Length: 83
Image (cartoon, rainbow, N blue to C red):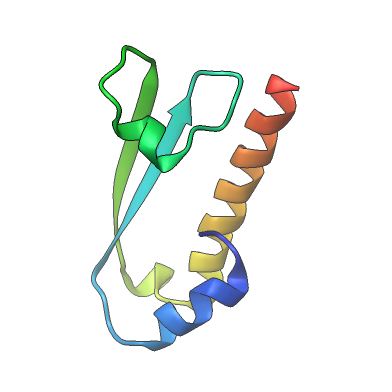
């Protein structure tokens, strides 16, 4: 996820107090399938998580959209580094 059109129904659906930001970094040349992620093979997969509390300053949709814009920028940067 990370696209604004996908987020609007989620943000309009109700109240929430926290957001869990999960970033998975796969250290291979190809993008893995979902099955590849769960196969019992040795590989390097970094999972970074951040629990963000929704406070008054970050309640606005624009704040949440900015979080996803930064995530999209990170993904594009990682893609360009792998060539």
